[in-house]
Each structure stands twice: as C-alpha cells, then as structure tokens.
Figure: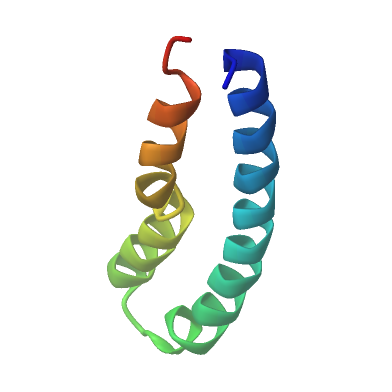
Length: 68
C-alpha cells in the first residue's frame, strides 16, 4: 500500500473517530463535569476529555507515517 493511500484511509478514519469522540465527550462532560463543585477537578476532567482522542489515534498516525 502506498503512503498516499495510507494517509487517505487514515484521514477518513481519524475524522470519523474525532467526530464520534467529540459527541461522546460532550455528553460525558455534561453529565459528569458540570455536577462537580471543584473548579480544579472540573478543569482536569475537561483536559482529559479534550486530549483523550490522541492516545487511541497514535497507532493510526504511526501507521500513516510508515514508509512505502
């Protein structure tokens, strides 16, 4: 498989995942973080949800960047 094809497939998968993850994160934030009284804990929850998409995407990004 060529590098160009891998990047196209990876981009479509990544875009789909990020859209679904964003919807999931919004629902989770609404039901958990908004009920927390502590501002620091709320910040940690939002930061974790905001950066949480990157860890599952790392293997895909490495696969996309693999040489031919």
